[in-house]
Image: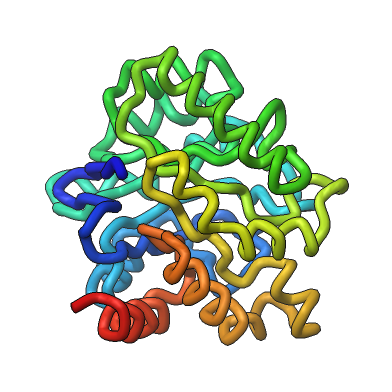
Length: 269
């Protein structure tokens, strides 16, 4: 099993389960509790690190279905403001964007990782990402973010994504199997199938990301809005840890850290 080095943090292998703390500077976010003004991102990031986050994932555009669109200029400006205070902070920062123009803006700052839900489908983005030399979190996608439907298609798309990564010289990789209602064709049952078969994804040999925090498939099951999905999120996350997740993308860092402590106490001597 490969590992992935993000700054001084190693993900995967025999290393502890890592936490990627989410900071959204997009008021359009599906979970209002995750929103932080761009001017306050560094302060929020430092707080999440104190609570147990290893890496901070910063996004400036909501990718949830039906979110209000924003311009590339607005996304870039939000990222500039958010990233401006991180220089020399020692906090590993991942940037969540799928547009090459925004990524080029982010690369002017002290960042450690790229989080691409488009799975390098944009050739210009893939080249910029490859030239940067940074590690990347890559989501299963053909042409649109999260567009494969069904577990077999997810696996096929991950192979496509890995080929794109190789073509662009990206070696340090974390795979994201695209849990979520990314396209109208996707259903909650599609997400539950990914969760049930998550262990099969270990065959790819790369660290796996658990990115299920407060997502729709959990809300559909427990009949709750995003604010009421934390217990379900933690239950699903524990299942994914048992079946191979090496890093957890979380809105609720303290609760996730406690979950990981329990998991490692029970499963790692």
